[in-house]
Amino acid sequence: MGIRARGDVIATRLHEAIRRNEGVDVPLGSLDITLYRDDLTRIGHAPVIRESMIPFSVDDRIVVLVDDVLFTGRTIRAAMDALVDYGRPRAIRLAVLIDRGHRELPIRADFVGKNVPTAVSDDIRVQLVEAGGADQVELVGAGVPA
Amino acid sequence: MTWQRRHVLATDDWSRDEIEHVLRTTDAMVEVLRRPIRRTPALRGRTVILFFAESSTRTRVSFELAAKALSADVTNITASGSSVEKGETLLDTVRTLTALGGDVIVMRHAASGAPYFVAERTNAAVINAGDGWHAHPTQGLLDAYTLRAALGDLAGKRVVIVGDITHSRVARSDIDTLVPLGATVTLSGPPTLVPSAWRCGMAPRGTAYEPDLERALDGADAVIALRLQKERQHAGLLPSLREYARTWGLTDERVARMRPEAPVLHPGPMNEGVEIAASVAHGARSLIESQVTNGVAVRMALLYLLAGTPDARELSTVDASRTA
Image (cartoon, rainbow over all chains, first blue to last red; front, side):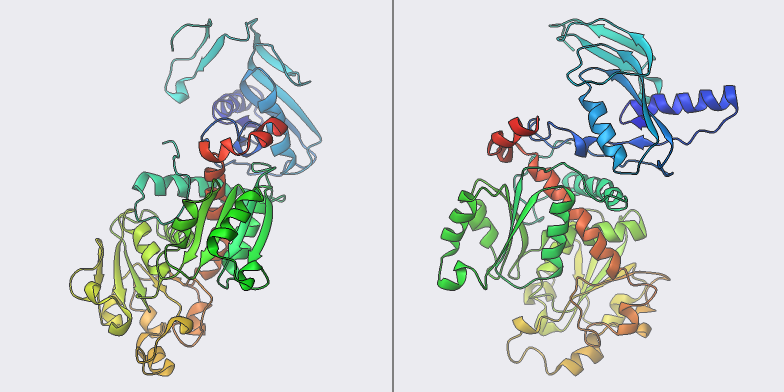
């Protein structure tokens, strides 16, 4: 289950890799967590919402949430809240491309592509071919212009 | 695009981008309403006040369900049974509603323009749920959403609106929403119930008046029947209800003049047997039930978008620190 907007791209790749290597077609969904954010009243304008696409029941399944970067953990908290509104999964696991530390909630990833030590003020930029970039992850220090 | 509006008073000055943004947000809300648990925490800690100074069932319930699906607190105030009955002025009512801490005021009023008066005098976001003959923007948006779900892109599509155009805020808001999306609108109805300027070549941009309903329907892509508003009729505009039904009622034969499967809409409540035959209202072409469902989603989208605007946020610093 990919978290929009970049987690679902990575989830799609994982889905394809599992199909190719294991011959198993794992159900794939994507989750928009905008309505579950805890900072909606702080960010000034209403973020664009996209539809969640969950074409299967999550009841009694092991659901792997997929996101690009794990930082404060608030996105994952929101994603878990969203997910349980769709049913009662047997277990929820978490897979991320980058874990950059600085958690604000008691959340950890089960599968991590790469641990990257960062300062809180650093910026991690994940680019993906599907989103119109090259496949690369940039660590940008504080104060570097975008 | 970034949403900038504080209020939804009418869609007559909206850009196509703004309309599209609401319709896209509505897509996400339709998905929420299909879930087993039809509730999300987006507006937790916010208060939506439904102030209906004119009777309404479906619009009020629709807003109430929309606010609850976003976890807002909802308070209802109707004119009967409130201080309005004791002679409180609109201004004092608004001051009270604002002081009570409403973040969003949804209001319906018999006086055209009343929501503008209120919007200038409150810090809350104001949504017009129908003011006099003027506008009913959420109905226009939900009709556009429903038509688009049925017909796809509305560019080049021709929609007929039939009935009492003069007294219809629904007709005005439908025109304001459908024309920017590329549709053309054919207006049809008794000449006594269509503004005289509109009949004499000065109809709004993208619309035309056709006094013959059957010609209007020939080859049309959709039709919206308006409710004959008996409460707004002055003497002499209509000979009789029966004559109205015979000349302007949507019957199976008339509806069959449109393109195959062209849908039929009605904002409700219906006078079955007057402006629409029961067989049409409940027939295969009818989208009247989807309008009701989509209405909740459109209103969720607007509540969500307004609650995120900077001005509404300033009022809610307490909420922000509590939920963060």
